[in-house]
Image (cartoon, rainbow, N blue to C red; front, top):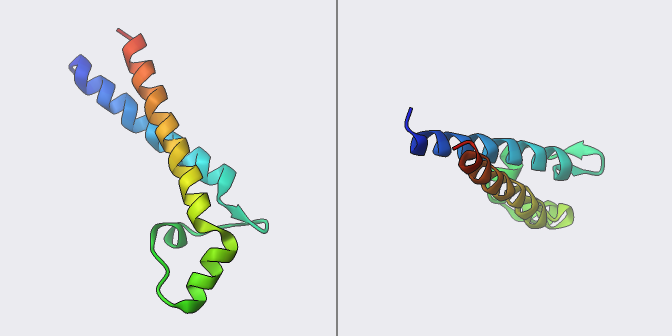
Length: 83
């Protein structure tokens, strides 16, 4: 595998690891894990929108995505260091 492809694989792997870690850290509300469906899909009706605001899903999504971005940066640096 070429160096470029191995860097891309490292970045993708670390993004996934970052997203999983972010979900495990920030995906809890009132002691319960938020379902992945709830995190990924927009609210469909008023009750879900209200629940979304109460759980502050936007902030939780942002934190999980930030962990994924941090994983991407780590994967990029890790891939460059392996040269």
